[in-house]
Image 1 (cartoon, one colour):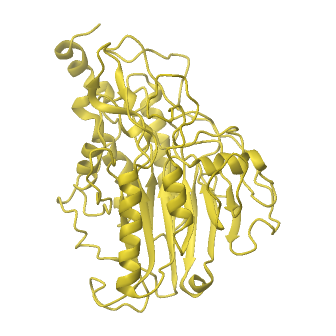
Image 2: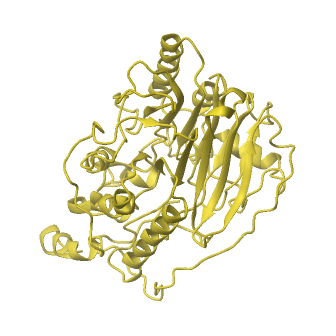
Length: 434
């Protein structure tokens, strides 16, 4: 094993992003340069959701940096094709944390956001299970993001087990003329939740093993969400339509998948069967050492999202081979929480890192001010090929309407030579999680 001084530090050149990084113009997390989010003059607001980018995978092998270069191309291509985007969402697993070195683990953030910054766009992140590991912390990722004035990622819950990327962003109407949104009622709320997972930063147990981090939205976050939403409803004297973002899907998505995904009514890829949900691998008592399959710790979060008026959809990633949307409007077998009609959606695996070769892309979400009174959202997936697939309207009849079947296409890293795969220098073996 290589020593830290002679090995890890000496190997940082291999672990450093291999393309030229953007440089923050100045450190400012208040977004004074960009101002609050608002609908465009035509009454639309568009989000582009990138997920599971997995930068920094096997940075010491030639194919690792090549994956990142090709992921940057995906970001550039889709943002060129979707010129009307108002906000980019990075919905978890930005970095393959188990392959990271402490000394430069968060440097990949600059590479990820380069295409966003180049277009004077802003972004908001959630963090995924791969964004926490022995050598990388969510807190440090947030600090790296907030070096950029384009970053809207925040932390609003500060309990020990809450995670980091829990916050909301208001989106004001096109008729709001004040610079900071003062005096205007938000037309839309965007909620971001941290489903945690992975491993705790710089912690090992008595046997020298990394310490696992629970992989569900914590009760402290659920309490904050319920209280804050109630506060905003009372403040503005109305229910404000909203959307949610969380990396790991809830157990409801698994129950819906087991019920059956119809290729014409819930168009999308359904290759990750059975999907991996929150609290997977944990026991009811909160331990993860007994071979438990699912502990049910996401029930409070499911109760919260199904009892929140105006929450139209929640978007997840994590399961690279699933890209469908499903209206959860019933009590499903094995579930104790009944759906209220909320739509649960997956995006598209966006990066060349991580498992699977499904064609890369990003889910687009288009909200129209004129449709908000009827709780309607349009969404589709823009692929790296330039094609748009899976276009649906999340309305009262979604799940009954028929749509074209989404093709199950694959793409392969054109510049990656996978014939050589070596262990992480400085470790006994390479580690990789789902």
